[in-house]
Image 1 (cartoon, rainbow over the protein chains, first blue to last red):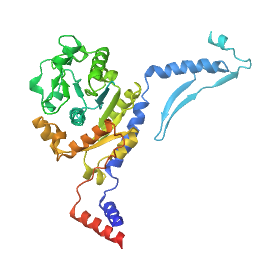
Image 2: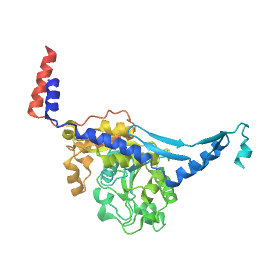
Image 3: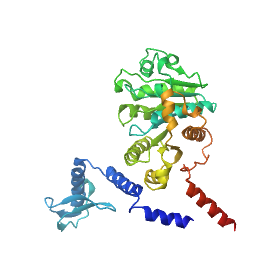
Length: 98
Length: 269
């Protein structure tokens, strides 16, 4: 009997059940809500990253890019920077900061 | 022993916060607890009419925190239910006349006298919400099985966590026959998305409208499914956290009943 009911339900349904659509949309909305990032946050992050990377590499600061790429499954922070040269001296934290 | 302050909140308006607050207050009092309910919606009070106490208001919560009256003077005693008191909101003040410190002070006093203080939080996440959660020990988040309500509930849950409160969820206005045909999120879907503990399920129930028309507590209407659900939620708040939550079921049609009978017979043979 259960099987019959299930079959009947499938025949009656026009494609997707609307609650599944709701659930999917809701999950995406919640992920995006939480990823809302203030404008200056990326700028601050870029400045900090340049500072850290510069301790190890000489980079082209003008060419550096930092973006958030969103796909259905996940979000990724993508950083791209040309490296001009490696710094072979062991970086000294205090000097680098100054 | 000090009582608990429980905030009833939802983010979105119109999902049934005030009805939930009034009903849980009445239910807890019927179960023998001392209960105060406080309307935190300054400027748009409604808990008083839902509880049928609107024509007995003299002082309000703003009068209390501003020292214009004593706490006792602002508490309206419900004459039908023992040990149930309402502190109404002010209808004429601005939202920000009350600050979080005021609420902490008020709730600390109420805790000494009452087993439960329920705060009916206004919709939104502004001043009234901040005042309410600042003073709360626990929280109940009310949500309907519908996208915008669940989204707002998620936001509010995040804000409660950041105050180290782990809220419990009430899914309100479930329409079982829509859930069964897949046209409404089930409570399981909602719990999965929000990932918090459920404290109760309330079906869409016409008697809630009747109850708000008359100002009679829904928990006193013996036939009401919603009333029963609220009594059970109150039990879970009140020392019986493991009382099982029943799935709301649609009334079965003739053919489904017949199907059920046949499948039961098949099982026997």
